[in-house]
Image 1: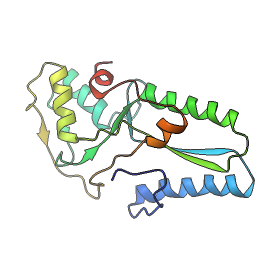
Image 2: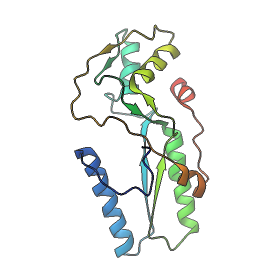
Image 3: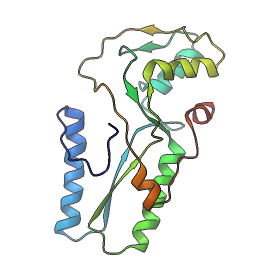
Length: 176
C-alpha cells in the first residue's frame, strides 16, 4: 500500500477480481480496437446522491439523525481513504479534458483519492465529533467476514498528468 496505477492486477478477493476484470476489459478494447480509453480507480466516494445507505458515512449519519448509536460491522481498525463526490467528479472531467487533447492513447489508469487513509473507527469518531456527539457513542459489531483489511491509493499520476487535486479534506467534505 498505497495502490499505485502501475501495480499489477493481482486481486484475490472477489471484489478485487471484479474490479481487475473490468480494468482488463477496458485495456483490451483500448489496445485491440485502438480506442482512446482511461481507467479510473476511486477510493471510497461519499457525499450527496449516495443511494447505498449501508456505506459507513451515510449509515453513521442516518444513525445520528435517528438518535441511534452507529454500528461498525468490522473491528474499526481497517484503513480506508475517502473522497468527496465533487472531487471524484472533477477527476472525471479532468480525464475528459486530457483525452480530448491527446488523440493517440491506448489507455491510462488514474487513481483518485486523498492519500490520507483513516481507520473506520476514527472516521466514525470524526463524524460524531462534527455532530457534537460523544465520540465513544458507537457500537462495534465486528461481524464482517472476508473484508479487505486496508485499502488506499496513491494519486500522484492524476495530480501530475491531469493537474487534479482534491479540494475537500475529510472534515470539509463531512461538514457538507
